Length: 453
Ligand code: SAM
Ligand code: SF4
Image (tube, rainbow, N blue to C red):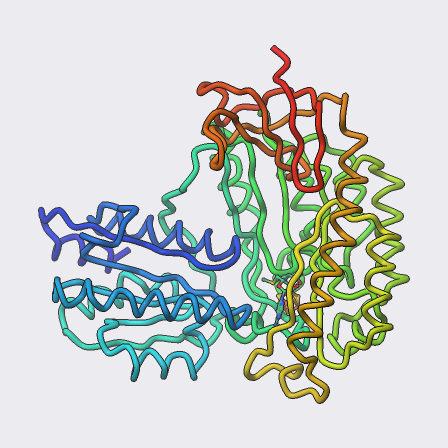
């Protein structure tokens, strides 16, 4: 707070602009809303183009090599803006620069970047900006995962009816392929009263769709001195007056509890959508991934979800081409896809991450084999998704309208509570509202229908 005021004083009555660019997951989107909130509190107007900005912040991702290369090349493109406007301040933050080798890359290869800070130092953004503006020195800040959680950071939300709410930060799971625990630090749960206050305020302000975020929400509260697990929290959050829907992500199968599924089944306000990353259908690969569940345990959770909520949409994450994955392992994954019948999959080709155990494993899979397996995975899943969507034809579903479709301005689009995209004959005033759509056509990735007036 102190530094936000100081920067505001420095910027006194100048009309300065800030451009904030986000790569990566929903957690990064949520972090960027805080960066925007802080920038606005410091007197910057948030703009959606970098060209005439006075401050550019690039919030980076490290989950796969491709994400890092994209962020680096974007930072590279900002050099010409700095040449044109030497007073431009460029900051790089987020997961990528929480890694020492990437900090060094920025330090030596991008000398025009003013300062960098890792994910656990997000709240230090105003302080670093102030010091850079006043001391004119390049700054590198990567706080070691502090136990503290910074509350009260201003948030500038990008959407007036959908909101992200972080319930916890960090991850303790150390899946052998994943960089997250190294760049986001240990698990820290926010206090339930702070989360309740934030969600209640959103609901009172008319927000319809609220997604609770955590790398593994099932660990919520385990690190804390209060007695409230994620199921208890969800139960409280679903009990406010108002027409809203709660979503959450992500739930780790090793400790997805029956209690959580029971709470979901009990409340209409909790979306009947379970995102349960499986990663692989081979027990041997799961063991080497350090996932700490097997396919039997995974399928047991799916059965309990379907028993309690037969209509629940189940989605998952799959990694293809993990080190040592054999043809048999991969076929077991395809078989699990068919057995579970996922509504949707987020599939990834394994990308070695420096410093993680899997990157050092023998038997890395050649790219051509990874690509061929990836194509087969998509083909199998497309057929399953179509099979799941076809029975929706003729049914009426409630959809939260997102306004005009991005690809065809003559149609409108929205999402079901299970996050399926629906295209329909909407109108301007529908944006941000629930509408009932009668489905008349289904494809693997989309539903089409007409609005019921
Ligand atoms: N915490 C969540 C969980 O455990 O499911 C997921 C977090 S991560 C941002 C999202 C997904 O990225 C993971 O579920 C995994 O499928 C994928 N992923 C993570 N590391 C990866 C890697 N090195 N290569 C490819 N995909 C990866
Ligand atoms: Fe990564 Fe595993 Fe943590 Fe998810 S649970 S963030 S995949 S280490």
